[in-house]
Figure (tube, rainbow, N blue to C red):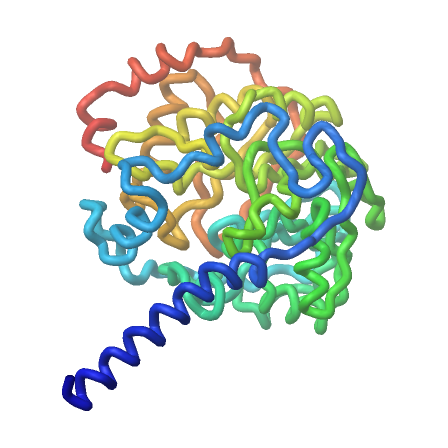
Length: 390
């Protein structure tokens, strides 16, 4: 054997040893214990779970081949997905310092990040100002700049963090907010451990628990999702939605990131009082052509039913048009939402532009609309315009 072949053989052997060691060592190293506590109906003593079942959230991506195959096709663009714009023009807002009384002004920053100003408080949901949503500078790159430049943000009083996925818990942004404003940060169990890595402190609550922040009460409420920072730490921390009970004008509901699950959790949130504004995700639901939902992400078809079950006076769709996380075209979520709203006979749930402040009227009871059977809704949507949406 020539010296060159010996060197190549040694390098291959070394690579095999490194990969083999990584397979054994890395999962344990990357796992984290974010929370310790007594078992409950959604915590087995080690990991959290959805009490309405995890078959849909635990399954691998559709289309076969497992997660590795899915991510390879996704990263190489070989999954037949439609093109997205590389840049979306955004007119950045310069919000008021404070909005007093029952007046409410809402600015969609992008993805699940929303600034809600009311009662003299500035509330921020799942703040992400980073350019990429992933570990170590990797992950999907945002196509739309934040709707508010970070330096133009008013002083933030309250931050809601729904779970620990990178497109929702951005440590760099949390660190900047903490250094500047020291806001109250409310999250669900275990996520405070991740947030603490930034030097910030968070109030971590279980579903049904609440915290008082100035004139408002924040209740952590159930939804249907999962959590992980490194795959091997799956479900070590809890996921949630939130109800912010306001002194007047109706409540704020933030769905976080969620699938439909048993569909009973919207009523649990609505039981805390009338909802003036609901922030409901509509994107990242399609991983194969024609798909209308995934276990972890509702699409517009289920979002309109969640809106109905909440009884909200107004809703703004989030979790679309910022980071490409799935198969659907850039503008499919809002177009499909408009079609689903027509088919369900509802109004008041429509997109707003990133970076454009929107006034939200005080709560007035919405006209009750009868539930539309999901199969009937899908039949209504089975038309050429909807079928053309990729």
